[in-house]
Image 1 (cartoon, rainbow over the protein chains, first blue to last red):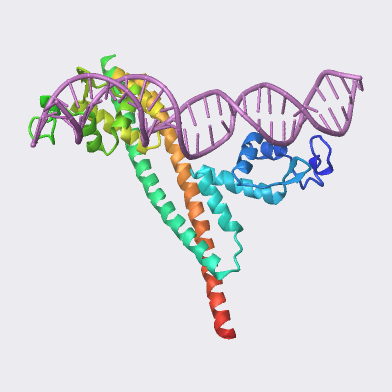
Image 2 (image 1 turned 90 degrees about the vertical axis):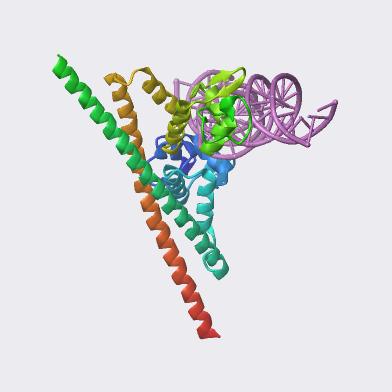
Amino acid sequence: MASTGKRGAGSALTDTFFTVTELARDLSVTPRTIRFYEDKALITPRRAGTMRVYTKRDRARMVLILRGKRLGFSLREIKEYLDLYDMDPSQAEQMRLLLKKVQVRLEMLEDQRLALEESIVELKEIEEQTLSALEQEAAHKKAAG
Amino acid sequence: MASTGKRGAGSALTDTFFTVTELARDLSVTPRTIRFYEDKALITPRRAGTMRVYTKRDRARMVLILRGKRLGFSLREIKEYLDLYDMDPSQAEQMRLLLKKVQVRLEMLEDQRLALEESIVELKEIEEQTLSALEQEAAHKKAAG
DNA sequence: CCACGGCCTCACCTATACGTCATCTATCCG
DNA sequence: CGGATAGATGACGTATAGGTGAGGCCGTGG
């Protein structure tokens, strides 16, 4: 187990830390991806010598990142979003800034949702058209056959 | 007007043909974009000597392409669909293929919408928390001042 | 002892969708 | 005649999100 400085499958007990590969497998991404995110300053694991050591917080952060991706955000956007979380929420100025960014993002998201819904409607129309065309085709064949 | 082989703003009458730039302006894309699509074999305008000449059909095709993009398809995918349409729109096999792809994308979009809505909820929570924190801060100052 | 994994860094490769020159030709307009 | 304008081709640049080795450092097991 990485937490003890040894290799292996990892026990169920003191597994509080992860290596890149462990975390990667856990999240179904490649180690390369995780290192890449680090390069982009999305995660900053601590090190044991040169080796990356990931905590549960790091893992949670990765989950957030992946979710952001699922939402179609760029890594840059995800980073901004995470940076907001990281900011010290005790200073009123910073809070106001945070609030503003959150609100801007909310607007963007609502916009996106609208566009998404329009797209869905359009695609459903195409789907129906295709379906009915297929049915007509079938009926035609039946009549002809 | 391009249709007469001359330049200018184009009249309202015999404007059945377009030059790249005309078509581009019409569709709010750059000429480069249109030429790029040609390079990718998405459109194949005829030529007058070396000059590209676009018909209304070409324009319609471009509209399809742009719509595909809006719906989140890659140019490659769009090309496949267009090729299907070009081949023989009465072939059930091809339609079924199209239908399947459309349905896959529909699922993806619905997924995205779900994730988006979750994200919006979360962000609204952050917004509220930040707001109330700011209010508390203000109340505090008032009491202390 | 030394091959075998596992980890590290560095650096180049891929695909997508164009933008940006650079260079050349044809044509119009004063 | 000489720009300006529009069109063409080709090559190179850009951003995003990684993939794919190359070459090296450890520690362990046979």
